[in-house]
Amino acid sequence: QVQLVESGGGLVQAGGSLRLSCAASGRAFSEYSMGWFRQAPGKEREFVGCITRSSGKTYYADSVQGRFTISRDNAKDTVYLQMNSLKPEDTAIYYCAAGTYTGIFVRTPGGYPYWGQGTQVTVSS
Image (cartoon, rainbow, N blue to C red; front, side, top):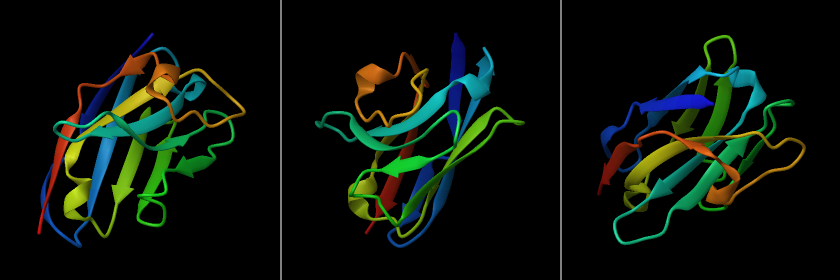
């Protein structure tokens, strides 16, 4: 089992940048593929991107491709979400999640047994 804590959210103007962090504790972080999701008020939870546990390959939703970058530091048990060129429609609570899949990309919440509490990102126009 792994515990996840997100940080780094806040208020930013459109066009700005934020970097979210997700610190893991418990079972070995390197054993988990990590995903980022977001949920805006009144909307379903949405896949943002993921990074695999073995090769560190990344995969992104079309809505953030080219603007967001996921990376991980296994020595620090942390995964990051660098968000650039932010838009008002990126406003949401952002969650990191951990899953044990390998060799594929998983974009459905059901593929991730472990979740953080979320961090709010607000982008003003």
